[in-house]
Length: 144
Image 1 (spheres, rainbow, N blue to C red):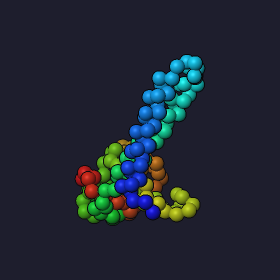
Image 2: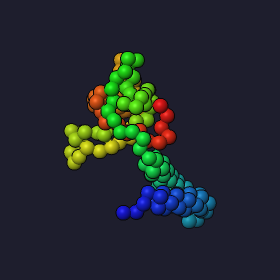
Image 3: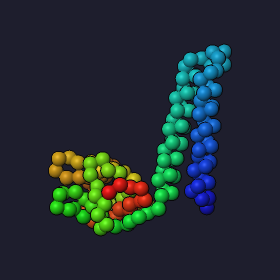
Image 4: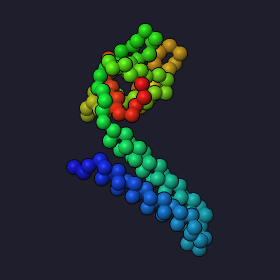
């Protein structure tokens, strides 16, 4: 299995090449592509570049060591925190173990963020998933 560093290097290389392809496509004369085709090509290249950026960000995030794996509990301020005292607030990114009932094949770790509805916090992608007792991971560089 390739190392994460190698994957990140290859994704960076692909990003750079895709950006050069996009720049070249933007310079194509109208004899090669009409405006509609050039715009279509450019739009698809932008999607590729955005997806590569997402992969870069995730690979960079996953390369950071895990500082803590624990379960959430609700503190006296109504916020959710970990055993080590890492507190999550509105908009906080959070890495959670999504249980089997939300995915047929298996539980999986997912990075999402917290929302607040005026009464309580919830996960952006899993509003009905209870936070109390939910397994979370905190990585190096995350701010308490």
